[in-house]
Picture 1 (cartoon, rainbow, N blue to C red):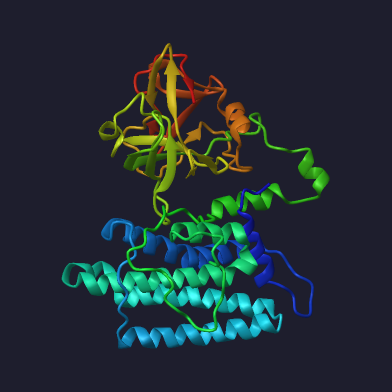
Picture 2 (picture 1 turned 120 degrees about the vertical axis):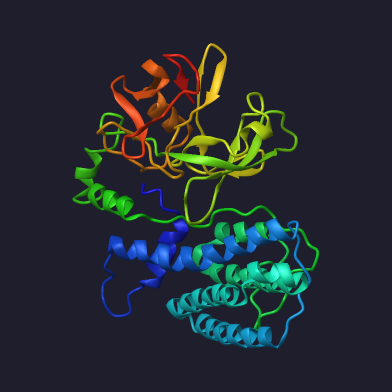
Length: 386
C-alpha cells in the first residue's frame, strides 16, 4: 500500500489513458499530476473558498450579485462545461476529465484576479459575492469530477458546502448556475489532497522496485526503520466536540501548503482550550484518516504518560513542520498506519534520561537536523507514548 488516496490513482490512470500505445507509469509524473493539477487546482480552490467562508462570513454562503465581469467568467466556464458535456456524451473520458480540471483552474484564476482578501476591507458585499461565486464553481467542479474521482470524493465537497448528498447534488446542467442558497451554512473544510514530496516519491520508487516476490520479503517493520511520521506542529484553533466530555476538534499547523490538519484529540481532561490553543505539539501524520464523533481526524497529537501523569510532547526551538527522526534510522512513512499499526510502531518509544524521547532504547528522537530533542513535558523516565 502506498497510502496515496484512490482519487489520485483514478485521476492519474484516466488522464494518462492510452490512445494508441501502452501506458507507461512514471513516479515523477504521478507526483506532478497530484501536486500541479489536483492539489494546485481542485484542492486549492476548495481550501481557499471554505477557509474564507469560515473566517469572514461565519460559515454561511453570502449573497451573490454578479457584475459584468462575473458574466464574462460565466461565459468562460460555460465554454468548458460545453466541451465537458460534449466529451462525456461521446464517451471521450480523457477529454471530459481535462475539461473538468480546466473548470477548476478557472476557479483559481477567478479568485486570484478578484482578490477577495483585499476587497473585504473596502466592500464586504462585493467580497461576499466573489466568494459565493467561487463556492458555486467549486460545486460544479465536484459534479464534473465525480464520474472520475468517485462518489466519496464528491461527497466530501458536497458536505463541505453544506449539501445533502442525496438531493441531486451530482446533477450536471448544460450551463453554470448559482445553486447554493444565500445564508445557507457550509460544513467543515477537509483536506482533499496532500503534497507528494520528492523524498516520498523516491522512497516509494525504491520500495516498489523489482518483483512482487522481492517486495514481499522486505515488508517494513520496526527493524527496518522508524515508522512514525512525526512532525512538530502548532495548534491554531481548538473547539469542544459536541456531545463529548473528552474530545477537542483542533486545527494543527504542520507547515503544509494545504493548511492546518484537522485533528480530533481526547485532551479535555488534560488541557483547557486556552492552554492547548497556540501550543507547540508533536503530531503523527501517517495514520489512516479516522472519523471520531462525526469528525474526520487527520493525525494524532502525541502525549507521554506514566502513573496518571499525562503531558503533550514538545520539541522546544524546532521550527513548525520539522520532521522527527530516530537517530540514523530511515523514516518509513508508508503504509499508512491503522490503530494496531500505530500501537506496534510506537511501542518502542519511551521517555529516556533527561526527559527526552528515545526509540528502541538507543535512538534519540530529534527534529531540526538533530538539534532539537523531543521532550516529554515533565513525564518521568520510562513513560509511554500514545
